[in-house]
Image 1 (cartoon, rainbow, N blue to C red):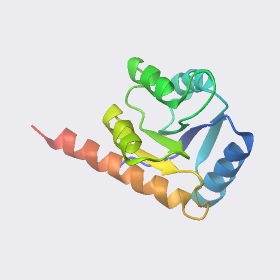
Image 2: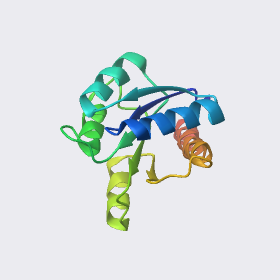
Image 3: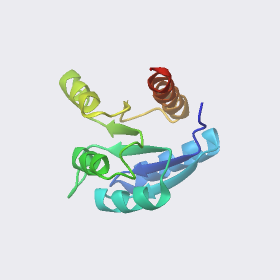
Image 4: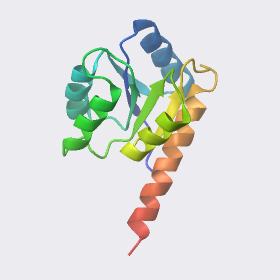
Length: 137
């Protein structure tokens, strides 16, 4: 199983970015790069090739779903797992994000004490899915 080391976090709210960065670095030992919008995220994802992207759904300009769609069009970014982070979690929206190909969803407000565990659980699921696909003849 590939180790989760570097996370790209995308949110237009500075306080959310600060909390996520502190939590993931201090509690999970992850390297975290923060972006304030979808355009910056597309640039950083292509340059840094993070292991995972946490992507806010509602952002001005290029929102989360539009950023996700752009990432999937780019050959060097399409295989990076994306986890949507959102305050609006209706069952239909959750299903839609997963149908788009998102690896998971984290609800706002999230619990900083359990955020790392949530992300690690999603990461394990991504790795198990990849392992199954690679072992299928």
